[in-house]
Amino acid sequence: MDTKPFVIPDIPLKKHLKRELLHATELIRAELLCSVRKHRTDIVESTHLTRKRLKLFRAFFKLLKECGDRKELKELNTTFRKWGQSLSELRDVHVHKLFIEEVIANPSEVISTNLLQEIREIARQQVDQMEQRLVAEGDLFKNMERQIDNYSLIHTFIESNQFDAACILKGFKVSFQKSHQAFIEAESSKLSEPFHEWRKRLKDVQYQLDLLRSHQKHINVSVSDVEQICEILGKDQDLNNFIHWMDKLNLNTKSVKDWVLSLRKSQHGLKHQLIAEGNRFYKHSSI
Image (tube, rainbow, N blue to C red; front, side):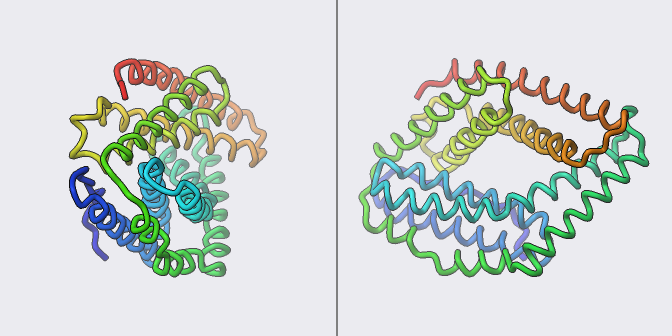
């Protein structure tokens, strides 16, 4: 298995753009297949990487949405979204287990080690059950590998439409504007879902910036700011999912309630930080 880090392909907005898009498609597809096949040795890493590659592909499609048949592109996006959703449950139980292990490695005075070990065992059992149902019995990764290997509609879409720098940059502008609107809705809400939506829209922007990195002198957006905000949004979402999971366990002891309360306070702090970072970022970015 190749362990070299994946470098997102750069798409020069020059002549032979269709050829460049086909080349980028093949590179992303090859890496996606590699991440799916990795389940044979590391299911956790395979799940994580596969979901990232699928999100990259979807951001790539959205970059092209002003250039071709939107109905075809919507079908492509829907297909890849469904593949990603099939991994969501597996990803969540992995994150719960990893979160608990991190807390055990850095003990908190709020909750006892014995109770943490009890929660860790619950998480471990859920991981085993989910992997058995989706992977061992359901052949999740094998089915996905076969589908991706036989999937040709991406090439068909690129071959049958016309592309130029203007339409691709317009696609990026649409993605950026959607991220800004999602931030405005998150800023005015106390709920977690709008922050999750903001993260999804800003991840599109992050991946598209990587795909267009040779053209960034024409894009007034700070890559480092986008990466930093996406990282904080990811922590917020993981924390939110973990708190919901703890609520479902119904471990109604005082120490558990106190611990969950401290986690909620941490999440509240993250949201304050995100609002400040978002206001600063969108104020100084112009598309």
